[in-house]
Length: 127
Image (cartoon, rainbow, N blue to C red; front, side, top):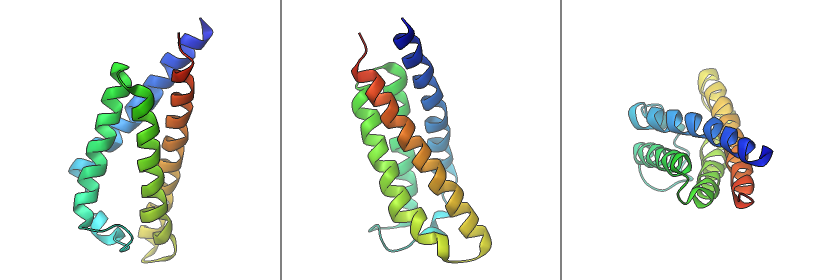
């Protein structure tokens, strides 16, 4: 019983920040033009929109408990790639505001990736 309640709490604690950050990525992607490091191919605005859509999709799948383990593992991979390819290279570049923003987003993506993996581990043992 405790395992089920832990899974439920973990799910909702993960769904809200994923969904909220996904909406923010979809509607506020102008800062991505400054974060372009050349590591990811294509236009930075496209990556912002794609990242937002992936976060929202993962939040929906996790909330609905459909393919939730796969969605949690997949979004953990996406968040790790964004942290390593976008935010980490920007820590030493640009003005102080961009460095602080990159650091905050790096920590946010690492924490959300870890929470996603924790949820995927809990979901794999559910009854």
